[in-house]
Length: 242
Ligand SMILES: Nc1ncnc2c1ncn2[C@@H]1O[C@H](COP(=O)(O)OP(=O)(O)OP(=O)(O)O)[C@@H](O)[C@H]1O
Ligand SMILES: [Mg+2]
Image (cartoon, rainbow, N blue to C red; front, side, top):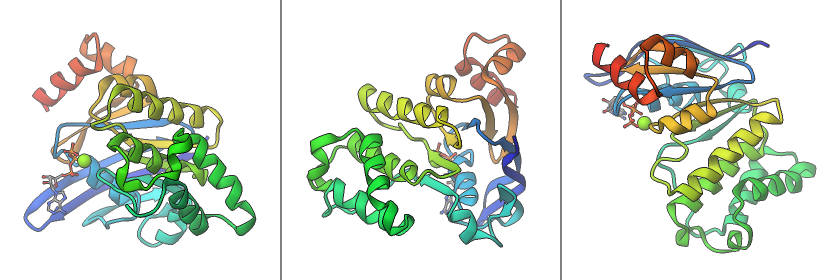
């Protein structure tokens, strides 16, 4: 297996704010890699750089060997991105939205297959006929996950996929992510505040605090290292020391 994502020495300044201060990590192909850390630690900033939405001030990222600045359009063709706080076109129905998005990414002959995949992932059934402006947060998130995964990206970047969702919607999203990873051919880089979710989904996690990675390893490995019963304890210990 190769390397899906390699980030090296990422620095990002927003005016006077140093959001990233030399952040480096590697994600192996086929794994689910979780970025966890306190509010403002730099998770979204990191994911936006990997997803070519913003450029680093210093450092670089390669996605399957392609530089995210120089090869931005090639990288975009390999990724699916679920943004942190996104809505979707309110006046379209869920179904229209999936078709619209499939039209951007798929060849004409593949559009139906991609849309059908999106329908499956969303699990929204009949409600896909309704306008998005009437959707709950959970329904919108499921639609956006469908958009991110239906094109079968090599890398899915999911920024806090279940933030603010109830148990039913959050469960649906986690199960779908797991199902798609299991099928093969998908690597996932996600951020999360939910330690149960991280334990359920992630093969490896990196703890980010104030713009740098302070710990990295498998959930079990990290628990052993800190003599902790769960990742929440690891998180609290590591961010206290770090
Ligand atoms: N567009 C921006 N302009 C100015 N500062 C920003 C901008 N985006 C992020 N920041 C700052 O950069 C730092 C990192 O923010 P970021 O959104 O990456 O954190 P995060 O780990 O995703 O936090 P959260 O867990 O709350 O989502 C914070 O101090 C934030 O205020
Ligand atoms: Mg964030």
